[in-house]
Image (cartoon, rainbow, N blue to C red; front, side, top):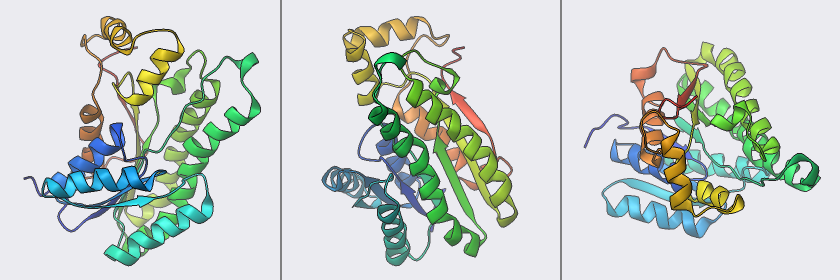
Length: 253
C-alpha cells in the first residue's frame, strides 16, 4: 500500500457512489483517514464499511451540502473525531436536466444550491481549520459541461461557477499553504451518466458506446480515472499546483 497520505484526514462529499466513492477508496488505500459524507448516511456508512473491510480507515456521515448548518456540523464532527482536516474533496452534485423553456425554477435552484453553493459552504467551513494548520488541499468537481451542454443550463452554469470559485480561493488561501484545484471530467461511467442516457432515450451501454466513438482514446472514463487525478492534486507532489482546472476527458474536445 502506498502511504502517500499517512497522518492526513480527508473529507469527501457525495462519496457513497461513483467518483466520490472511488476517491474515498483510493485516499484510504494510500493512507488517509477518510470521512465518507453523503446525503444518505446509510449509503455513506456502507461505503465506509467497504473501505474498512479492505484495510482502510473510514467513517460514514450524513450531510446535506446545500444546508449551512449541516455543513458546519459535518466539518465540526470531522475535526472533533480526527483532530484535523487536511483534504477536502467537493464531489457532491445532482442533475435536474431539461431544456431552458421547460425547466422549472425549482430545478435551477436545486442544482445551483447543491453543486455550487454547497461547495462554497464546505470550503468556508473547512477553510479556518486549514488556515490554522497552514496546510490544506481542496479539490472541487467541475465538468466538461461547464463549456455548455444541451439540456443542462443549470448544471453547466454551476460547473462553470466551480472553476471561478476554485481560481479565486486559490488566490485567497494560497498564502496559508492551501492548494485549491478542480477537475473537469468528461464522460465517466456512473449512475449519473446512466440517468442522462435514460433521459435522452438511450440504453446506458449504447450511450457509452456512442460516447467512446467520439473520444480519442476510444473509451469512456471510469470513476478510478478521476480519483487518480484527485489523489495527485491532494498530495504533496502537487504542492506547486493551484488554481487549476484539470480536464479528464480522454482527449475529447
